[in-house]
Image (tube, one colour):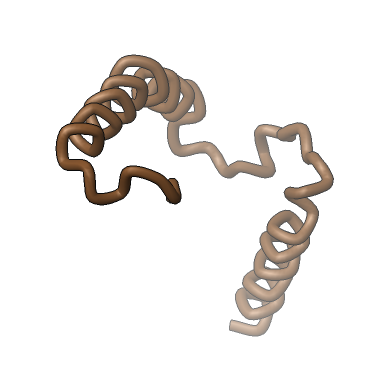
Length: 75
């Protein structure tokens, strides 16, 4: 969130238009293409590059997968 010109309606409209354009014309097509390429595959089956900021989420995914396997083995 910016800390300047927050109550300037014209400026807000310009910022909103720019952000919307960037998302719709740049980010959205890339995200859609990536999702199409991945399809319904499990994330970890794709062997993604794991960066240090991803460590916590990856540990949680692995722990949850282990818990699901353990629960299914009992059933």
